[in-house]
Amino acid sequence: MSTSESAGSPEVSASGWEAVAELPPSAKLVAKVLEYDGPLTQSQLAEETLLPARTVRYALNRLEDVEVIDSRFSFNDARKRVYTLAVEPDQ
Image 1: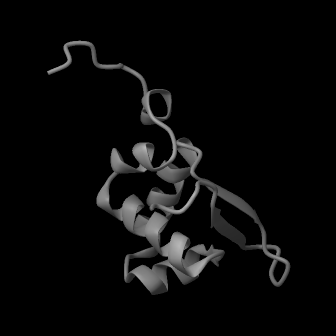
Image 2 (image 1 turned 180 degrees about the vertical axis):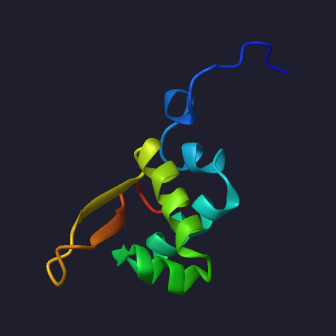
């Protein structure tokens, strides 16, 4: 019913899980897998979600845009990044 919608991206209007709710289903799935399975690489996320690697990359980019995930270089393989959830688990 609101006539004033923000013209910006989701990170402007919401934060945490509220921001995730506005993202595509693939991003929601990746966020939930990170919530339950902890730190994972992009290839591990693709394996866990059964999504193509390209779709996982898109989902990770969207999640990074709304600042709900963190990434760091893998200690095992510096060519890879490890992603973790940066918001409190959904209650």
